[in-house]
Length: 95
Image 1 (tube, rainbow, N blue to C red):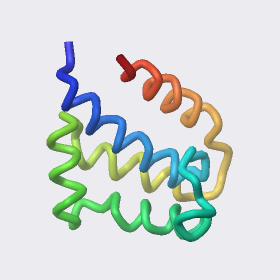
Image 2: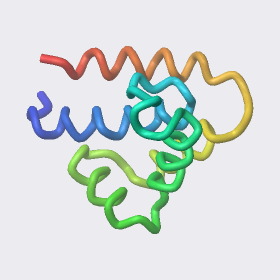
Image 3: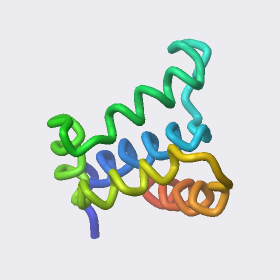
Image 4: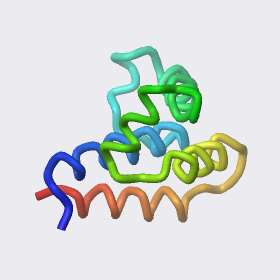
């Protein structure tokens, strides 16, 4: 069973992936719009970013695999299946 802390950090990573896919639930209008949130999440999900590496480590996730998913989600295409799986997993992290 995952600790509460690990689940929290996994939720952070999943939210970033959803933001990259343009499917985040963040209040985009309050923080600069969906495209700005998406661009920030894409920049963040990079293996040269120490903060990204730390968050992946705290989440117990392979940073290279997460970065690969982020890159895939940043490309044009239908990401609805991945978004559905991410959304379901995020919901499962809730207590």
